[in-house]
Image (tube, rainbow, N blue to C red; front, side, top):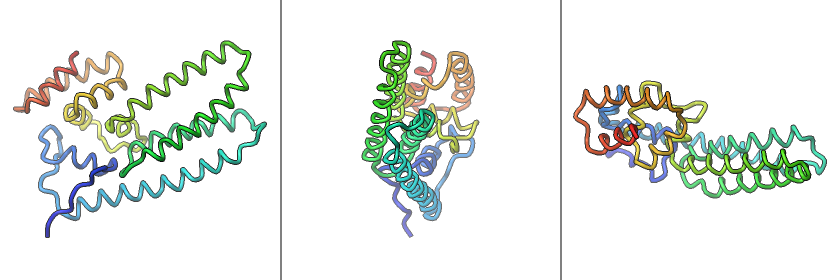
Length: 215
């Protein structure tokens, strides 16, 4: 029986499976996977997608039912849930641009409501401006799949798989992922990466990622 083909737009389970495939950087690489193993990670991603669609419908309904004079905390809680939903959408299989755009539109509607309430308060308006800039930057980082995969509350990336994941990334992916770490954490990553790479004969791409990590 031929093995199941990998997806063109994999979700986080299949994506992490593919990272470990024949990759000696990982402590537990996947070698010669079976048809059933590939189908299983695809099934897990499909289940997550179905759960997400159900949850997104709930959030949309909550947004529709917001009252004109809704309590501020209710609005802020919904906005926080939508921010998390956007992150989750970035981990999912298949094309998610439509769902991501819908979530952004809902967030924009909520932000306009909050801005109306902040009118005339320069400090509150400044905080909202800074928040929107931070969100735009955060959402741009999420376009690199490694970022939402790391941020997921149920991340599949084990502690001893962090460096193998980073060193297996593209230049753009590693650059985005490094935004999640402070200076001291980056220093520790470099030390650990040098030990890991030094024990192998890595391909040129991994050597390039190590050099990037040191920048």
